[in-house]
Amino acid sequence: MMLSFEEAFDIVLSSAGQLGAESVNISRALNRVLAEDVESDMDLPPFNKSAMDGFACQRADLANELTIVETIPAGQVPTKTVGKNQCAKIMTGSMVPAGADCVVMKEYIESPTKNTVRFIGEKTADNICRKAEDIKVGDIVLRKGTLLKPQHIAVLASVGNTQPLVAKRPRVAVIATGTELVEPASKPELSQIRNSNSFQLTVQIESAGAVAENYGIAGDTDEAIDSLFKKALDQNDVVLISGGVSVGDFDFVPRILKQNNIDLLFDKIAIKPGKPTVFGVSEKAYCFGLPGNPVSTFVLFEILVKPFLYKLMGHDYKPHNIRMPLGESVKRKKTKRQRWLPMAITQSGTVKPVEYHGSAHISSLCAADGLTRIDVGVGEIEKGTMMEVRLI
Image (tube, rainbow, N blue to C red):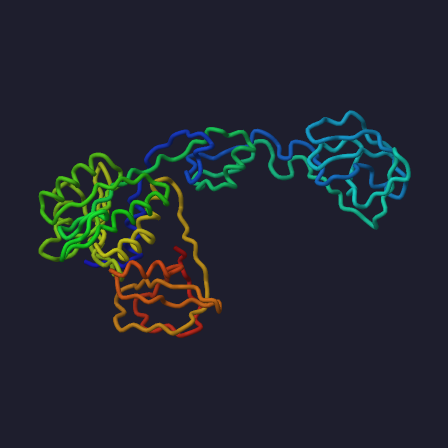
């Protein structure tokens, strides 16, 4: 039975368990997923902080000449209280002294004498970052499941969390099947092609925060595929096999998965490219059988496998989508499957399909900025229609 993509997606994500957690140094935490909430150990700012270089004073005295009582560099605690008709020269980031309720920018100050200043502007903001206005001690600053980007690393540092607890990275094996395949360093003979899938999938896996290992090529025999699969299954959390999943005489992958006690949850999806996609689970690992054509493997990884890998790490992955008008009409004759097309952003602010000859045309993706979905039953989309494009 062939499932809709939505049904297959739900099955895959609902099958994802958790792989445990580990603490890592903050310098190694980029693109890891938090395994617990993070609380602040202090107020931020920890004191009333000057937002400007200028003079801290009392707003009620702005029309008067002010006597400078001290200079406060950043990192120094004020030693004096600002009283009536007084001010303190202050630097950006410095602690605002007691008694002051605003900081006047130095650009709006004149100095009648060496030790006095006068405000010459019409009005001023407070220019004070108030204590705890950003974060209060005990606040949860980052939630479990957050994918750590540079801005999150800065927050971890600001609250002193130098050893965040993060989800373990899934170990993912990549196997390519096909007697016609040779490795990229070899010159293919007549009827042979280079193995691109393994290298494409390996970097896609790494970009999704998982750990990839390329197990090479298995020829189109039961013995070759079974031997390499057993090794990968024993050493990894997830196994990705490209090729050998359709209905040809040498498509052995589904049978070999079953022989190794993999419970196949589906073996066809109503999608193009990528119809003969297989997914199964066991007590040891999760297994995907992806079509051998490289565009199929690329697309299925992006829309199905990547969200699954993030789910294993406890992160709810959201793709980067944009909405833009279609620059030219798109038509298709067969509408029984969901279709994914490579799209390019034009200089006129529209999107249009790139030149695309089918699921073996991997170089077409190099001209694409993203992928767009055409739903089941839709045969034509008119020029000007707003399209959602998944950036790649």
